[in-house]
Image (cartoon, rainbow, N blue to C red; front, side, top):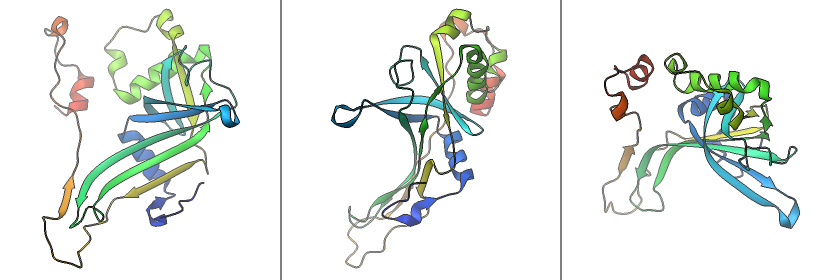
Length: 213
């Protein structure tokens, strides 16, 4: 596992903290290097993900560069996820900071076999919106063939988790010239808006569960 070179107290080896962050934040950035040496090019793509035990599932078009068939099979990748929890405003901008949690998972991406795609895509939806698979029509063979599922395994020594979760406002040594404090930052689902062509349908259980109604 990579060790931080500064503020090492923010690093944690607690796997539960990593899992919790990956489960709460469904949006991350996947980066992969193409080529070697001075000709190498790094490509990054923001993407949706779910954690399924010891693996991260990603999906995209079979023709996509980073997650598609054009990616070098032996190239290592990095997947980054970050959550901002609060702004910490101090008496100076230098002492101001944020409360955050972040993780980087390293490894080699694996493209799912064609025979496994349907099962993994169903699993992806089950983890993202539990119960939704039972409410919609099944995927067609054409849709499955056009969608690639990429797996990044979470292995010991191949991830870094760090957080600044409890650091308060630095008490100034000089005169207090402004309001100081912590401003929590939260995000969540709003009120569902039905599509015009389905407005006569009741709110399904999968959506009710997500928004808590």
